[in-house]
Amino acid sequence: MIRVAAVGDVHLGEDGRGRLRPALDNLAEHADVLLLAGDLTRHGAVDEARVAAEEFSDLPVPVVAVLGNHDYHGDAADDIAKLLEDHGIRVLEGDAVTLDVDGKRLGVAGVKGFGGGFAGKCASNFGEREMKAFVGHTIERAERLRSALESLDTDVRIALTHYSPIPETLRGEPPEIYPFVGCYQLGEVIDECGVALAVHGHAHFGCEQGVTPGGVRVRNVAQPMIRGTFATYGLGA
Image (cartoon, rainbow, N blue to C red; front, top):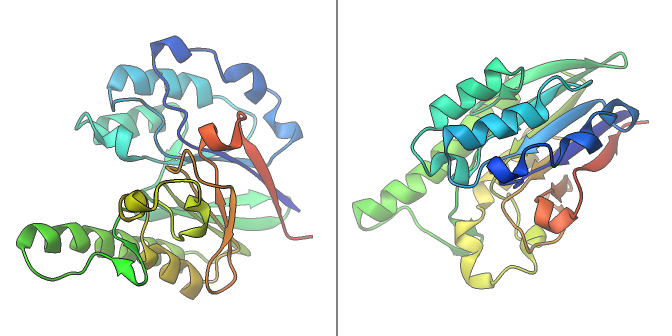
């Protein structure tokens, strides 16, 4: 069995230094890989990212991350990604990584994703150029996830995003904000690409478990919702 630990939305700042580390040092007893589902910082500042990098570096298992909207807020996403990479944390944005876990090849494809909403109540790629740009970014992120997943030749595939691919894991959030916390395009790609598990964050007041229309397990691992340093999931027998 492949054991996956995951968490998102830790929103670390200077006052969070050392807060997570005690629970992470023995991570290998619980998991084979750690996935970070974005929003590692509060305001997208490099100094905040340095705290996150120190918390999640030099762990006994590989660490794979995507960034979230908070990490983009300070217009320093590239610097944040490089800082995390320099600390041994693999940051994905439309690409993938293959890991050897207990004789199996685990593939993780990651992208931040974007908003737009879900079938029947979603934004349309029509009208003002601002609206078309919004939806165009959603479509482009989903297609980057597709390319990343299709590039994997592995036994198991995981999709890692910040935004949600389904509305079910958003239950508990105000319905009015659903278009800003996920989009159906991500879910369509996940269903079409043979994914075993989809992991996302962003929905602090959502619920943990959901399923895509095609039957793929989806897990919301936003820390304010899971109320722990990480959640763990098993894949395969």
